[in-house]
Structure formats: C-alpha cells, structure tokens
Image 1: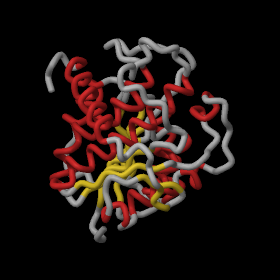
Image 2: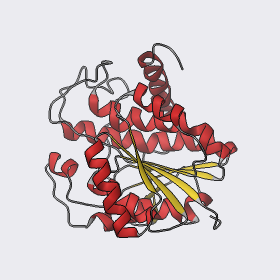
Image 3: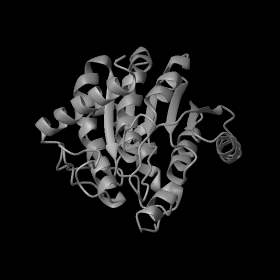
Length: 272
C-alpha cells in the first residue's frame, strides 16, 4: 500500500479481538479507523481507549446491528468517501437457538449473512477506492457445514456446531467473493485471529492464552501489509498462508453464496 491516507472499517470492534484489530490498524497513522458497534456506550469507550493507546485521533464509530440486513444497508447508504479496508469480525454464539425478527437463525445471521451483506453493500465504496481489500476473520475451529440445514431447522442446535459451521462458511465465502471482486481491484482473504480469552470463546467453553493484540496480529497484518493486497482467496494462520480444506469444494461454496443472496433478498422484502 502507498503512503496516502487510508480508511478502514472494522465490525464487532468493541469486543476483545475487534478492539485489538482496530487498535492495531489505528497504530498505523496512515489509517482513519471506523468501528462498527451495536452499543453506543461501548463504542464511545472503545474509541477513546484506542485514541489514547495509538495517539491516532482519526478513530470514530458507526452504530449497526450486524445480524440485521436492514441495519447493514442503512450503514452502507450513509457511508460517504473512500473505503480501502473492510474487516469482517463481528460474531456471536448464543447457547440456545434464537432468530432475528426477520426469522433468521441468529448465529447464521451475524456470523455468515453479516459478512456476506457487509461485502455486498460496501463493494461499490471499495471498488471506488481500489486497490482495496476485505479481511474475513474466520477460525481454524471450522467444519460441519450442512448446506441443506444452514439454520439448524432440522438438526439439534448447539452453539459449538453452529459456530464451527459459520466459520467454515466464512472461509468458503472468501473464495467466492475473491473470484467475483478481483476484476474490481478488491482482494478478499480469511484468517484465524488467534486464541484470545473473550466473551465468544467463553461461550464456546474455551479460554485463551493470547492477548488481544497477539490475537489481532494476523488480521491487522492482512489489513495493512502488502501481502493482503497481493493475494486473494486465501486463508492464513499466524501470519502465514495455510491450506484451507474447504476451498476446493466450489460447488458447495457457490450454493452457500446463492443461499445468502436469496436469504438477503427475502429479508429485505426482495429488494436485492
């Protein structure tokens, strides 16, 4: 990336890893950093903390609910100016199956459809700012995707299985978007962020042995280092490219993309 000013947008930015990612990018003073949060109080506190930590005054927030397609579309419609980096990080893993008001299983709505809709709605802004990049925070804790029951309407729901499926979905969507957006000058890569003790990891029964800054190192690297603009459609762990066992299944990846496209259109009343 050149030395001109850049704008980065990070979802789920008031959580442990999200804040680490936002702070890591803001430490590079070429960047204006916009945090997407649901809760205004947490957003204000997080912005103030990152400004103190990084001495970068160009940190602000926008409010949106990443489980709601309409909220994401409002965020995109209100966006003005360039966008060079989109980091999809927002995630949830509720212990019991629940649905959004639109009838979408909450974990799928946030962890998968939220990523899909953020990329879709911000493609125009990213394209205008190209070269641009998308970083999808996924996980090595991924697998078990059932393309015929993505929202656990037939299977017994447990948050661990739903989370693993959502992270496989994020890695597969990375491949499909990388192919579609490459002609627009937008790269799309996915990564495992690191093992941080967070609300989400605790909900899955895990702790974490890394600090938020350590956990955020790979997504920050993909967002700011030349590597994130040089390659597309890849998966990374510990700042190294890793083999993704899901990437070769293009048929399922395309079916997942179409499901998200259809679900997004249904949620918005067919306005796609």
